[in-house]
Length: 390
Image 1 (cartoon, helix red, strand yellow):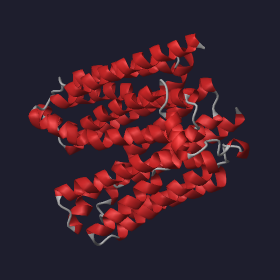
Image 2 (image 1 turned 120 degrees about the horizontal axis):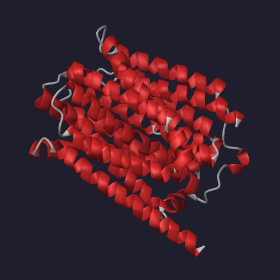
Image 3 (image 1 turned 135 degrees about the vertical axis):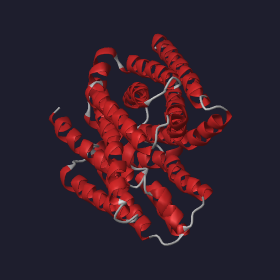
Image 4 (image 1 turned 90 degrees about the vertical axis):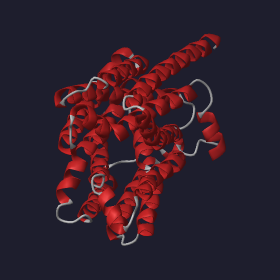
């Protein structure tokens, strides 16, 4: 499809720039908040409130995009990011920083589900995995480059990265405004009867199992992200610089797989096989991480995990948008909400497990992967049963 060939590179650029802007502030936020007077507990709430807003509002924006179109909602999300970054840069009190994070969380919750819904609109069923993989690759690469840029610019001033992130978001806004065409025809908008029925429809049937599968995957990933620095320091004596390189290697590998292999694999084997493959590789990665003893093993084992984990989300997104009876925006919005729930609960759960025993977050990751695999088997069995009845 010619429209797909034109739109996917633009969507790649949009999500890459959005995630670079988001990633820029990651290494700066703890120091910036501390300078304003935030305690470690308040910093935790500051990080959590953003994810909480995403959890609540991602399904709302997804449904809105089903009613009014994708492009205006993407523009709202990106302008919200720009506003929140600039407000954070201007913050001189802790309440201002919290207000900026709340505003950013509410409005930027529109970005990911609406971009995924846009991809679902413009791709055929067989190319859906490729399109979702492109979005995933852009997201991963943005997280690779963003924190590195944030570290560099923070040497000038702790507020500079926030302003740069805001400028990047404004640039992305105009990129969408002038280059991205609407993907949802007017006659296809507003098909849901009302918001309540839309959520209910989305959580009906075997498809609901896939949302909980994604929740388990997000729980295990965020638990790893919250504890791996401490684990690597204890087991291999690695510091911040080495960890930065390790996560960069993992990010590049994950982006390459999502951008280059997910589409081919889903087209050849189907999303279900790719999801199962990703879960198995993730579980193996969790097990290998327990054996980390130096920089090389940490880089290799974490990359193996990252490759497995990286193919799951695009494949789940593709499968849901192909099988759900609700609108693409409602479907991807609810998926983003479950993803956010995992990212909220994962870090404190991982920290608690690490406190009990340093290997427990990764053992629990294996267990969560097994549960996710079993959930897919249940989903597959229920789907086949429904098809046989029809």
